Amino acid sequence: MQVREIIRLKGGTLYTATPQQSLVLAVDTMAERDVGSLVVMESGKMVGMVTFREVMQALQKHASRLDGLTVGEVMVCDPVTAFPDMEANELRRLMIDKHSRYLPVLEDGILLGVISFLDVAKAVLEEQSFENKMLKSYIKNWPDETKA
Image (tube, rainbow, N blue to C red; front, top):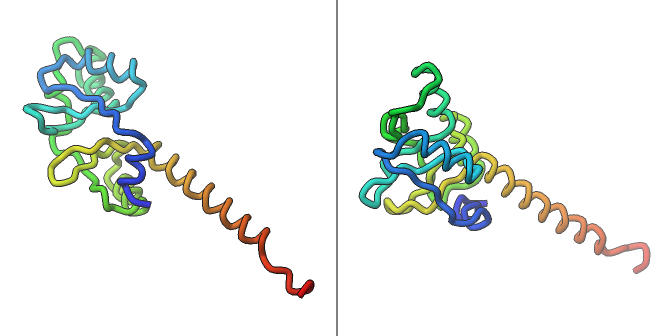
């Protein structure tokens, strides 16, 4: 399974913020949309990512106060990215090695979406379920050589 298939299964909804946006507003968006990350966009290009990890770090650093902070002050400026032709196993290894729960997917500099570790788990589970059904069907229809 390739990353492009995971994006297709997940859907193309993308949630974004700008570097100038207040971090409080970004957190509100993440909570309302039940997402763990926002792609930070400026002039039509991805300039970073903000996840709940950066929010937690900001809370710790600023005595549990986010007032006055912007997304640009806490975002990851150069997030690890994936590409559509990447295999799911390679993607999982990259996410584990880089401790990234969310990866933007880029093709020729164009943002196609963001894949979460949960999206990968769902896609792999669906693929395994399909393969399981196919194997059961194959075994069920196995020729019985004793009747021949």
